[in-house]
Length: 84
Image 1 (tube, one colour):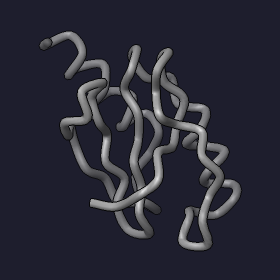
Image 2 (tube, helix red, strand yellow; image 1 turned 30 degrees about the vertical axis):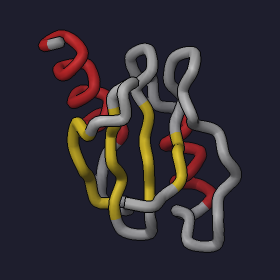
Image 3 (cartoon, helix red, strand yellow; image 1 turned 45 degrees about the vertical axis):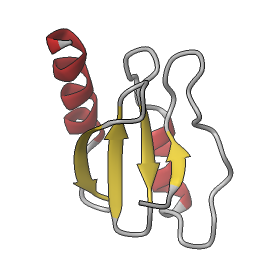
């Protein structure tokens, strides 16, 4: 999947790029950038899908770009982190 990293994660995260024209709305982008993810976890997005990724780049979960709630994303990241 080609997309842009998004979200705040731990040191070494590829997050923080500027949005492209296909990016979520400005308000949605701010909401997603305020996520509190475990060290190294990050979000990759395209116009329709947000993909939660581990520090090694493997996929944890995918969410609707417009419908996912930040709490759901954070919960998936925390659960995956604890299981590792």
